[in-house]
Length: 96
Image 1 (cartoon, rainbow, N blue to C red):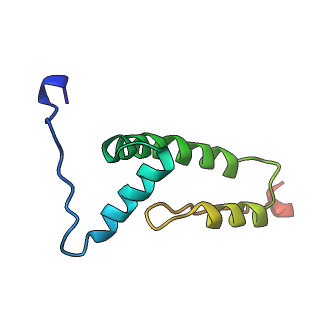
Image 2: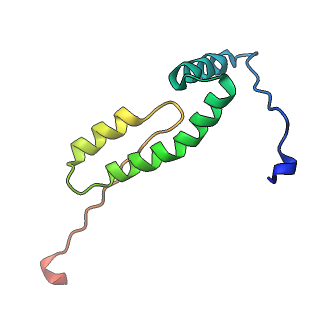
C-alpha cells in the first residue's frame, strides 16, 4: 500500500463480543506509555521481532528438549503458539 492509499483512520470494532480488543489496546497504551494509536502500531511492529527472537532461542543447540518445551509453553499466547518437532533417525547395522 502506497502512502497515497493509506487511510486517514482505521476503525477497530469493540462491540459484539470484541470488547477484549479495547482492553488489550488500553493495556498496550499503558505499557508503551503513549496514546492508543501509537500503542497499536508499536505492538504490531514488536510482534514480528519478538516471534523471531523466540524462534532463535528455541533453535539453540545448548538447550535440552525439556527446556525448549518449557520456553515454548511460556512464550505461547492465545494468538501465537510455538510447537517443537524433533526427529529421530535410526541406522541399522545392515545399512552401514
